[in-house]
Image (cartoon, rainbow, N blue to C red):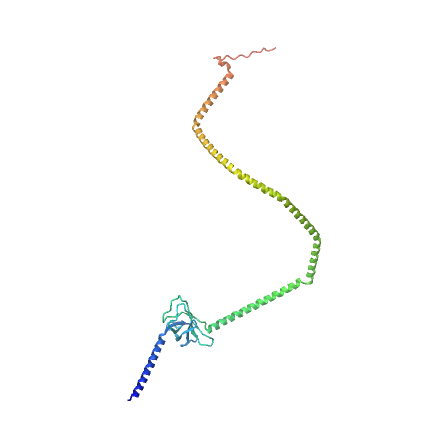
Length: 326
């Protein structure tokens, strides 16, 4: 093998090694830049692997698998690869959506909250169910039935209102008929005549009220000086009371002191009277006894005054005998 062939073979082998190295490095870089997450829905809505994954409206990955959950067949497990560093947190919410009406379904994840804990790689993103087309059709059907019932009820109410309005118009027509119009005209004519009769009296009452008002103004004008004099008198009385207040207070204080002394004297006198009450009682008894003795002596002297000079009482005189006439 000549030199040129060896050089060519070396160049081809080197190029192949370089391409393989570049492929492996790029593949490992791409794989290392994504992490796996999963979420669950009751309704997938035609979602397929390869669909975009949006975080706050920005594409951050793709759906890798859409299949029923092995543990709960009533829900759909959706796996996705998301770029490393995407701030998925526990307040983030995954839901089924679409960028436009004609595009394929996508997984839209909300940004959540900055304070919420981050979801670790391989974790489950909380999901929010999307209303399916069948559910919307059922709700529309229920709404249509309710609207039909509401229209029927409204139609009935409108018919009732129409009947009431017709009765009202009939009553109004009856009220505005010729007999009622003539009656109203008679009432207005009587009212005009009454006003014409009462007008002079009203004028007279108005004049009297004006006269009373003028008299009241004069009385108020005359009462002005009297009120001023009364105010002056009240002011003088207040000043006099102010001047007399201090001496009166002093006299009241002296009187209170005198009363306290009198109370003390009365208390002492009561104590002395209680101490000498027994002696007074004995003295009074003796005086009473002496008085009774004096009274008896006086009565005895009145009846027998000779007892003062005679020891024995003289004999009573005989009654003289009167001669009888024949």
